[in-house]
Amino acid sequence: MIQVLVNGVFLGCLFAVVAVGLTLVYGVMEVPNFAHAGVIVLAAYATWSASAAGLPFALAALVGIACGAAVSVLTEVVAYRWIIDNPAAAPAVALGLMLILQNTALRLFGGEGRSMDTPYDQVLVEFGGVSLSGVKVALVVLAVLALTALHLILSRTSLGRAMRAVAQDRGAAAMLGIPMRRQYTLAFLIAGLLAGIAAVAYAPTFQVSPYMADEVLLSAFVVVVVGGLGSVWGAVAGGLVLGVVEGLGSAYLSSAYQSAFGFLLLVLILVLKPGGLRGATGRRVA
Amino acid sequence: MLTVDNLTVAFGPTVAVRGVSLHAEAGAVTGVLGANGAGKTSTLLGIHNQAPRRGGRITLAGVDVTGHDTGALVAAGIALCPQNRRLFPNMSIEDNLLLGAYGHPRKVRRARLARAYDRFGWLRDRGAEAAGRLSGGQQQAVAIARALMSEPKLVLLDEPSSGLSPVAVDEVAAILADIAHDGTAVVLVEQNVRLVRHLCDTAYVLAHGKVAASGPVTALLRDSAVSDAYLGTVH
Image 1: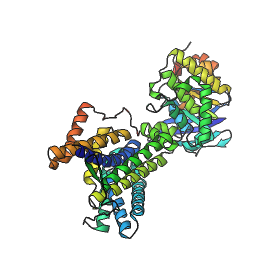
Image 2: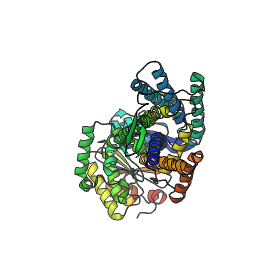
Image 3: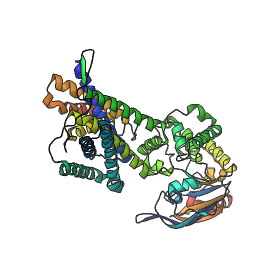
Image 4: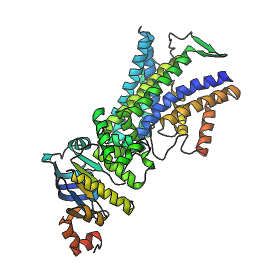
C-alpha cells in the first residue's frame, strides 16, 4: 500500500510540474497550451542529443531545460502573441503548434523511441520497506525544487506580483503601466523551464519519442481543471491527488484504466466543486 | 499641467470622443461631468492611452506625451484611478499598493509604501489583508493610494464616488482635496454633481463625445440650460 502511494506521489510530482506550466500560461493569457507537449518532447530530444554527443548528464539536462524555455518563448512570440485579442482561436492555434513541434521532432529524430541514460539509473533508494529508483527520486527532488522556486518568484518578486496581477485583471494591470508583452513572455519562459525539467525527469523513466508527452499532457489538463484554472497551488494539489488516485486505481483495480480513474476524479470534483480545488471567481496564478 | 487638444477616441466605427480639448492646473481638481455615454471615461482612457486614439495632442507640464504608451505615461507622471477601483481582490493590500510603483527599484517602492502608510494610517496594520475584503470606501482609498504610489504629477479619477455611502464619499472628497493641496493636478470624472461642486473650481461638461460647456463650476451649475440638458436639475 505504502509503495503504491509513493509511486502515486512520484506520478503526481510529474503531473504537477507539467500542470503548473499549463495553468501559469492559462492564468496570464487564457491559452490552453497544448503545445506544451511539443515543448517537452523537444526538450527531451535536446537532452538526449547533448548526452549522446558526450556532454555529462547534468550539462545535457541544462541544455534540455534551456531548449524547453527557448521553444516555449518562441511559441508565444511567433503565434500566441498575435491572437491575444481573439481567444476563440487559441485552442486551434495551440493544437496546430503541438503538431508542428511533434512533427519537427519526428522529422529530425525519426519515430523510433530512444532511451536516455542517467548517472542514477542503477541507484535504488530504500526506506521503511519502500523502494524508489534513483530516476524517481530525482524527479521528486527536481519537482520540489522547481515548484518552490516558482512559489518564491510569484510571492516575493516584483515580476511575480505583476504576473499575479495580470492573471487577475489584465486591464487593471495595463492601467498601472505593467508591460503586458513582457508578462506573457515571462509566463511562457517559466512554463518552458518547467517543461524542460519535466522532460529531463520524465524521459529516463520511459523513452524519448515524438509522442512521449501526449498522455502526460492529458493528465496535466485534468490536473489544471481539478486544481482550479489558473491556480498554481491548485495544480500542485491536483497533481498529487491525481497521481495517487491513478496509482491506487491501477494497483488495486486495473492498470488498463489508469487514465480513466483520473477522468472519474475530474467528473467527481467538477460535480462537487465546479471551480476546482482552489477555484476562484477570477483567474489567478498563486 | 495637462493640456488635451482635440482628442478623438474611437472603438472601431464607434466614435466615443470627438475633438475634446481640456486643461487641468497643478494643485486644482478639474471636473468632467456628463450623462452616461457622454464620453467621460473614454476621454480619461484616451489620455492614458488605454483606448484607441484617432487624433489629438496631449502635453504634460509642457512635454508632448501624445505618442507615449501607458507605461511611459505613468513614468512621465500620469496615474489613472479607474472606474470601479479595479483592485486585485485576491492579492493583499500591500501587493496592490506596490504594483502602483511597478518598475521602480525595491528601495523606492518601499519608501513610497511607507509614505502611503503615513497618508492612510489605517492601512498600515492591514497590509496583509486581501484587498477584496475591504468595504467599498476602503477599496476606493486603496485605489487612490495605489495611484499615488507612482508619485504622479496628474491623477485621473473615474467616478470615485460610485457605489459609496455618503460618509465614504465625504472621506474620498477629503483625500482628493488633500492630494490637490499637495500640488498634484487632479482630473475628476463624476456624475455626483455635489462632489464636483465641493472640490472643483473648473469643470467641463461632455455630451455626445464633445465638450458642451466649460468654465467655473459655480457658473456652470447656475446655468439652468446646462444643468437641465446635461446634468439633470440640480437647483
